[in-house]
Length: 208
Image (cartoon, rainbow, N blue to C red; front, side, top):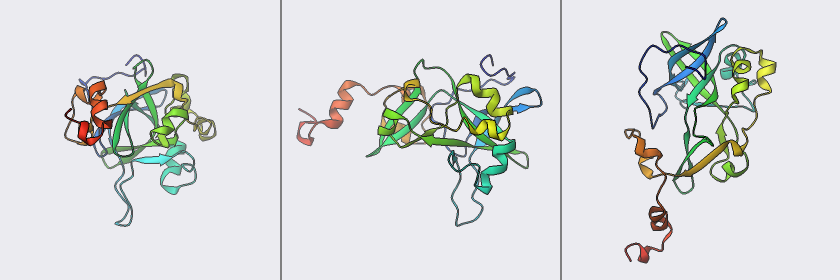
């Protein structure tokens, strides 16, 4: 509430493994005030030939008809304390701000009937983050929040750039995060040195 200047009346349950189609907290601008709401992550496909949309590429967001109008008029912040990413082969990592605090991803908000939905913008990953995956969420600096939500499209487009890798720290986590039904604090616990050694040891040495 302090960080984003909003009033939240409901008790928010901590989430440790948010998946597409589930609800997350987003912040938008309503007139002169910030407004917090729960919205569903992702857009249903327009046809059987299309896939469920959860992200929008920053490089093309102003050109794609699906995203262009929302970028001009309905930008939002998606509140998070970190995200998971996988490096090959199926190796999960947790990525968070260097101080472990709350961050905000740039998002686009869509209203469908009485259901609010959002997608998250992505950029190229910076420096060491690219060793895990070549894309990353568009993570905004706190001083840019108001510009993102209330500025014009031209001004907001200047924020479509990768967040520097030194903003973050990242570490290996266990494979349980890959199961949507798992949602508990242990998912963000770093893998122990013993567990990492077990993964990299030759097969014959696993139980030595």
